[in-house]
Image 1 (cartoon, helix red, strand yellow):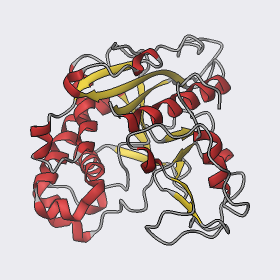
Image 2 (cartoon, one colour; image 1 turned 90 degrees about the horizontal axis):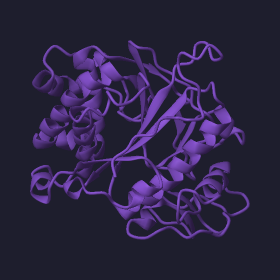
Image 3 (cartoon, rainbow, N blue to C red; image 1 turned 180 degrees about the vertical axis):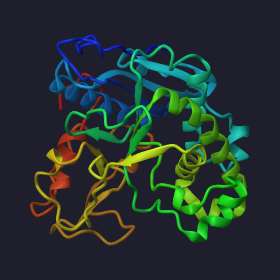
Image 4 (spheres, rainbow, N blue to C red; image 1 turned 180 degrees about the horizontal axis):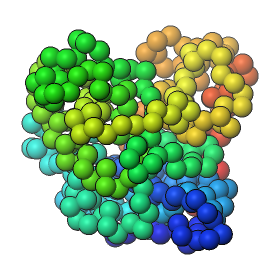
Length: 332
């Protein structure tokens, strides 16, 4: 039930027909839930599609779905995509951290490393992906051995008001050292990730137990655990603004050609419209709605009604790429 995929269609890094190729391994962090299973199917489908488009000399190498599950047990999806199972925090363990389930992400990466997962990969770089990532075009290796590549998040900028927390949890780090990044999307060399993972986990746990840090960092606390860990270890990132887009109905003007300009559609926000095509109010479900959160415990329908005609291009693009699936091999 535990396996990693080595690309059989792509050339090896040393293939003379592909000079300069620097393959990376995709590590899709996930949990064994219905909600993340259907997202994983969509993600893997588009990964395979874009790897084929990249051709044999592309940088997209093997794939592993890294799954945190109860007791590390298989969830049944391993028959559809290469999967590596590690244990998730028990109910009692995660209760200590306010049932903040995203802490299983760094916990799973640490377990993967401890069980020789990185040594089993033939690629020297890793791309950490999330289940709600849809690749829109082939993703090249954006990193170097010494410099990772990450998306620049607008809500992850560190300022002088963060300094007291940095002094407490990362002595010697100043706020200007902390980059506006998280652990995904991220392309990073294996040695750097191995060094980062334990501190990423330990800082995330410590921040969650601190009432001031917990209030300050909120739902992105684990991302701050990563960015502060990176700053503590001197890990620098190339900030890639077109790594992904996170569009919603109120995004303003969106270029129709955006799928050719960015690599990933991260559908973290719901797309909410009235039937007349106006963006729905803040924190309101639209008369036409495309939001992953509607499907926590059940598969989304294989077909949804099309969005209003004047909806932004993001609604049409996401609908075309996400309305499915029962298995990852189904064609959209």
